[in-house]
Image (cartoon, rainbow, N blue to C red; front, side):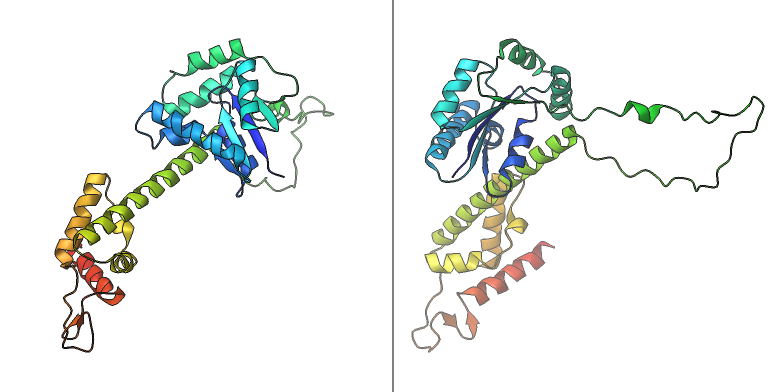
Length: 288
């Protein structure tokens, strides 16, 4: 049986981190922030999010949908449309949520949104509520021990043969740190996938423009290191690919009909993995 769960809360409530913990390695998370990181504008990001939600409804995979949705009527409608088996509302306190978004975004522009969320929020029957404010500090940890208990005034302080305690273990990461780490890792993953897909497409297009066959272009692509050619922008990636082909001199082979080794001029291969690897190695050496 598949799981469809709707997770809601104010900005900074911990929705994405909580959703990813539930999803694990097999489940999938739908979060508008992920689409914002790759979409050209907000309207496109929301359109992609809506399409993903529609696909999730009919999917056999487990899906965890992240939304804000303070209004109870709207929340119920979305849950019904998604076919969600349950809805979780994260009731992280406004103070904690504001602190998180300030540390994450570097500004307080979402503080008003957090206040408005709490003004409009009302739980529906059957919804699960959960607060991710973090564990409170142990007040007894700061209380000094009563070293003089049972001693008379003027007596020297009691001594102990016990060894000094070892240095305390590093503290566990806070919710804020986990949130930041999860978001950063997800953004880097999405960006890497996007850049790799763009590089692969442009590399093949350039190879085909130089009259290489689909098969030859695919084999050549398998010999290069994409990270060495992907730039900080698409324009730089295009320039690196063009330079690679120009310096390498790779183009469609001229078949020597009088040779028993089709695709070779003399003894040097003009196509295939061996040729691509040799040209790629030469290109990388020239760039050092």
